[in-house]
Image 1: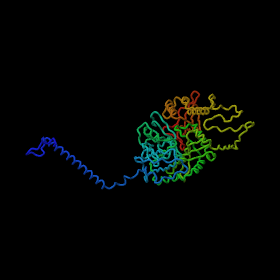
Image 2: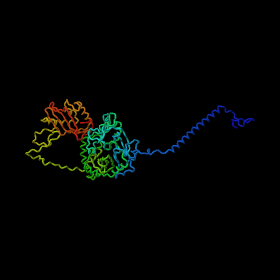
Image 3: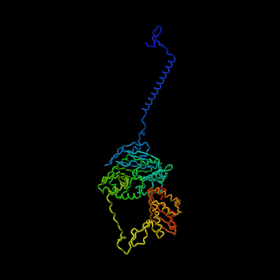
Length: 585
């Protein structure tokens, strides 16, 4: 027996609890049971609702195919990969997924179609695209398919259309490459950096478009659409991101009015063009057109280096043909096309004697309906530094001597022989009168050379003015500001600036420009007593700015020296003037 039950007694139940359950115990029992029933009912109702919803979703039809429409950028990849370039090292990277950002229009939408194709190993797989209609700058990258890395709002020229001339406030359109950049530790009208484009490129030069000073730069103002003088302007922080993706002379910058991405069929056709292209045929045409050579330096090339590179470029003709020890290996090719403009980029490794190697990137500018039926306008070689350029040129065959042709009407006299008639005098220089190049002993009265600092002033006022003009140019080119400003009278005035303001303006330009070159041609001097007028064609160039124009000067004789009272510059129609607005020399 359990301890909870009492012994059996007559008249009592068989199992009688020893203690009564009590009314409070029954209440607790009922409350717990009611709670369990409520919880079970709630769970059952929730399960029924879930089953009903699942059944309705299973019966609902699939959504329209719009959800499966691929991104236009993703569709740029052809259905079958283009054939690989023969004898090329390296492989294309694996494809990367297209970004979710909305790309430009594709297909039959009006606009300029950008064709491109890559084969093999190329030095750059990014392309900068400026869409003037959308006022957007995009950084595209090819990894088996084209995708957008970055996209920012930009500002282009105030006037619509193609840039034609200096000062027309239009942004040029075409395929460009960056050449160098400037950076500053403070914010100016160009922000804190500016990246120069190679406008006018060979296509612009063929169409006789001029101007220069086209940059991608920042700003010190609020960015507004279509508010520049022709440059592409970005916010400073966004430009810093874009600048980090640019490789000088390698990253194409494509500027179009309205970008249209090509359909797959056109992409495949572009790769077929690249496969069928003959580099030997391009090199043969290149030899006839001439060569251009540059380095990858991100800073402006100095004038002395430019002259050396031009001289080395002339020796590149017949590089491989003239030396059996030179071997050229093409590692990769890229093709870019806009309308009738085509640019072929070849990445090559050139091996020479003693196992030396030079990495070269070559650009061929072609104009025609397609690159297989196009005319070569120009070619461009890019090497790492001047040392590599010298090494490359040393492998080329020596240049043939150019025969010197002497006109029959002006025979060259024999120096030791004495002649009764003096030899013919050389014609005077077009800019500044200087001493004769080969003075004879009997010409003792010849004036001293202009370069001599201790030379006496010429006898005539015109010769004094020409001598002053030569010294003025030397001081300007040499950035000798104190000597330069000494040629100006205290009463000087030009373009609303007095002498002090003019000095500050020139001091600023001397700090900004690392190289300044000035040349005066067709000099005309008119002397009227103590006053004179000078007119000449001025050729001005710097690392940012270049122009050609006619300069007018009013001079006054003061204290035995000619001083500039005023000067005025005007552009010459039909002459190249390549500068940004407000940067006139």
